[in-house]
Length: 190
Image 1: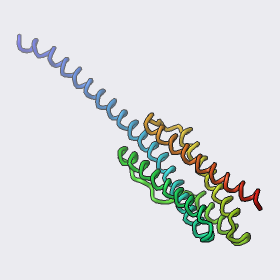
Image 2: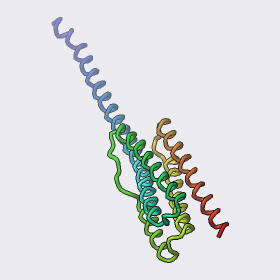
Image 3: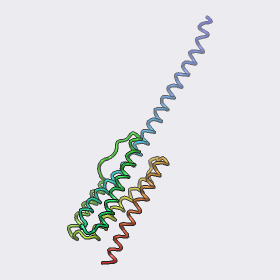
């Protein structure tokens, strides 16, 4: 009889522990799913920035092909800006890999539109400095918009990643302003 009386409290404790383990497992599962969803959203935001930087590289390579050999100043600027985007991609790719995500390799739909617009404009206006600079400024506007969207996202951006995005946006704004300055100077001279 004593052994049955002793078993009852242990049985209740065992049931209670089992219930606690089930609760813990469900809670951990929910936390894991939340973390995975957060990482997926964050990876998506970072991949959008990689795509816009791929667009910039394609756009500046196209611009390099459009300008005359005598436009040495523009050639240097365009090469610098393409390299700037390559560096941005490397930095963003490292963050995506740290999150366990897969790095995007393509471009955005708007980037394709940008390149088509540049082709059409070149057909009608020729390969002059003004049209190339206007096309580049259009691309820089798109890059600024993409970075604004990334900073305004609903995705939970950790402070270090938010800082990377803000720093890249600031560098791209300097590039935008340089392109605009060159365009304005060229228009003033002509």
